[in-house]
Length: 325
Ligand code: NDP
Image 1 (tube, protein in one colour):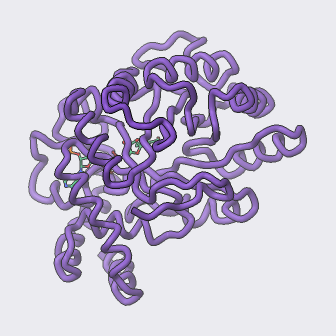
Image 2: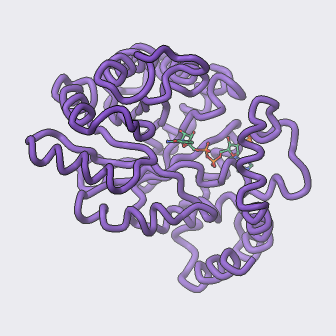
């Protein structure tokens, strides 16, 4: 396993990490969760990502129970939570957004569900236009000083707001945001490569990126049909199926269809090539993997070797294929 600093912080995360969205508590039961976490940890993965909203809190409960059963040393892994959405479908007004009230309650609830004394990483899951940074930053600073959180950050915030939070923190001698959690894959790259570009140096921002396979589209599994046992085949994921398969009028799906042939020429799987492509960006602190079964994790971990093996010429071929197809 390769380890990378979380931006300018001293924390070293595994370059590949493992998250629970749409799987834990939905496609993955506690036993499978435990097996995948044990396998991931044994392979050197040291960061497990979660959020209050995943499976209405059940994803955190499952991860907490599995970590408890495995009795992994607490200092050998990092765990996260993210707050904003509340526990859908119908959170009360106090149970949603980034108010001091919700950020604090959601932190306490995540600690209980995950069965840990502190969260290594805690994110503001989306921007909240109703809560000023003058409320968010001191709340996160307090949670860090209380020892309930080690590093705090944002997810899918615009640069202007990240800068505003960092500036407020600096001006008031508070602990500012250390990381962002954006989507990053071959089909979705503008924010990480362009919008955030100034922040890596100016703020020392680390990024923990999500959906490296665009929910599976970049594995080639959706080229002919939607398999019933896949994420996009789940009846309660109709919104996601539409968002992924119809993105940009189907252009994403057409571009993804070129990946399997290209991967074959490089002697790897499409998933490995897509994940390796994320890894070759040095600003990426960790690529968060998703998996519904252990064989996917086994395959996807092979991306580390692919990232090391492929040369500049190979990556140029990938770029060309994706910009012209
Ligand atoms: P991916 O885009 O990699 O999608 C993962 C899914 O793709 C798996 O659950 C599986 O679904 C399928 N898959 C994975 N590997 C393979 C393979 N080798 N062959 C075939 N199918 C495969 O990642 P996620 O979208 O899950 O994102 C990763 C993590 O990022 C999440 O778990 C979550 O922690 C975080 N995240 C954060 C968000 C945020 O807003 N901050 C938003 C979304 C995710 P299946 O088998 O069911 O088809």
